[in-house]
Amino acid sequence: MSTTLSPEQQWRELTSPARLPGLTPSGEAMLRRLRAHPAAPVFRDFSGHRLTPAVQWAQRARHAFLRHAGVQPRVHGAPPAWLWPWWLRQQASVAAWPSLAALRHGWQALPTTSRADLQADLARHVPRHLQSPDLICFTTSGTTGHPIRVPSTPATAASYAALHERALALHGVRLQAGQGDVGVVLAGFQQRCFTYVSVNPLRGECGLAKINLHPGEWHHASDRATYLDAMAPELISGDPVSLDELATLAMQHRPQALLSTSMAMSDGQRNRLAARFGCPVVDVYSMNEAGPIAAFVQAAQGFVLLQPRLFVEILDEAGRALPPGELGEVTLSGGFNPCLPLLRYRTGDHARLVMTTLGPTLRDLQGRPPVRFLARSGAWVNNVELTQALRRFDLQRYALHQAANGGLCLRVAGPTSPELAPTIAGLLGDWPLTVLPLQAEDKVRQYTSELSPPSR
Image (cartoon, rainbow, N blue to C red; front, side, top):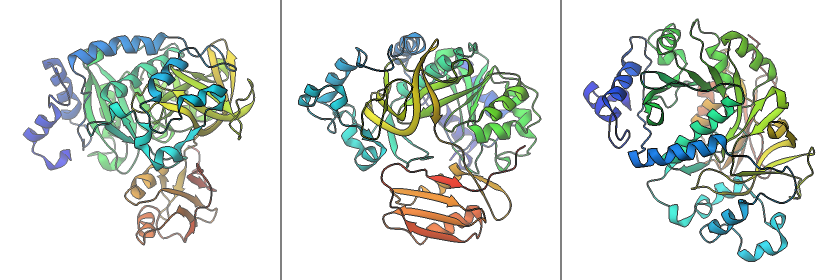
């Protein structure tokens, strides 16, 4: 943790060539600016792009492809042409995939996969030639499903920015930040979260900071607005919970856009935030398994697909592809993460796939709504905090519900721990808690509540 090291040790960790290869004096100056401002928060962690100069050149070409290449031309019928060679290249290397003989009955005869399959044996879904202890692994938040570790690479992590830029372009926003600018602030709102500063070598080492808006992570609550005004980030990214907190701050800075990921955002909240900050609020449908999938555009009345090499199908319960406009389960194949190629991956989310003037679009998307739980103290607790608190337990699957009277019901698949109840009570107080077996199969709504916080 950053706070346990001396200032000299922190600087060595922060500027480590392994984390930030090729760091220039301009990049070092940006890191100092982000960390040393008098109103800066507590930064608890270290991170970096890990992109060598050679990889950076390759990434520029890859980013151009991800930003501009066409997305699947059809919403129903035969898969896009790129899918067949992609499948053949991967098939022999991914242990979980069916044999070549499975294709004799066509694409739709291939079996589907789900989060439960990844959770049961993730290694069988990672290409053998990419399996390495050096892979980066991100843990999903499990907002609707159940936490899994998703393998990735520095190049894959950097590609998120290209897809986010594509989403912003749908709203007329073109990012310009470069040397000497702060490009993006990633804002969370939790009691504890991963916080750090870094630079983006693909955009002149512009600054990047991951901050926690929880007042306990700042010397003074007012420092949050002071710091954001001083850094003047071009883009602020968060989720509906953290962006709601952002709107309460007395900051004067107006970013070029707000970017919301991880949870569904209502039209009312989107409009309120846009009015508060005078900029577009871009709602991105995203998940760790697949990255950014689509971005909401009012003109398309839905979420416009973003990835050039992600085939989206809408399936019924039996796994059959549905015609355009019919409601079914969003199912993914391909993706930009070579460490986790998806084969007919059922997301558990439902939508209608239609063609619009902006391209294939998901309408009536039923995704992952944010859930806050009422603590006995009267405070509202983000469901992400519950995920983090319960992550240390060996829980394959669980679902937590809060009734209208505040009482809690935790359903768990498999054995439970006597420490579960005290852990939940540590966040929510001494509400009555019932622990029951979880009987539902596959993906269930992990967090639900009959209570909702008052509107602001």
